[in-house]
Length: 171
Image 1: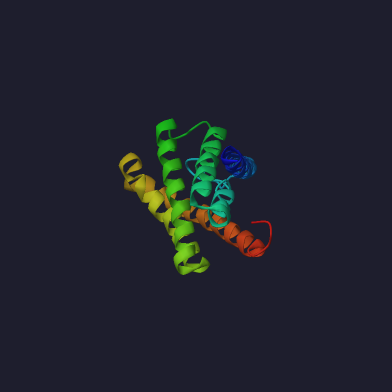
Image 2: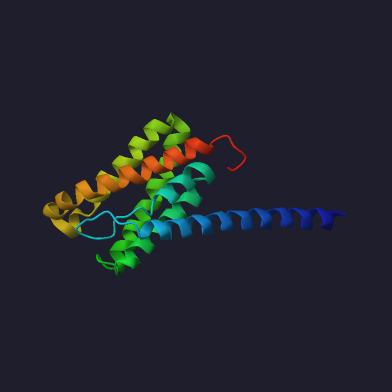
């Protein structure tokens, strides 16, 4: 009898993991599509890849969103040939993962509007200034408007999509 309970628990756990992996795979695929939609910029790796990751953070949890958004950025960078080098793009992917988790956290604590503002500021402004040691102030100022536009579009799309299906059986 006891073994049956353990097997049933393992089955439920593995089913949850399969569901979670499936969700991540679908949204990483959406990120790949978004990676093909570029916002013209000096670096070429700013695109519509992070909206699925930001959405996942809101809908399915910070960790899920962080994984999706990090892979989304790496896909966008790969499409343009890792213009800032692979280590720099891994650094940016890590930042994006942190921003997705912060987006989720602020939404839970303060609501969607503050989360949108924080998401845009982190992804647009803080990400630009995080490149200061590599690009210098001129590079940061050149990158800033493009990152803010990209962040604004991605975060607002994710928030609108989340608001549209929040409370449904889909999430």
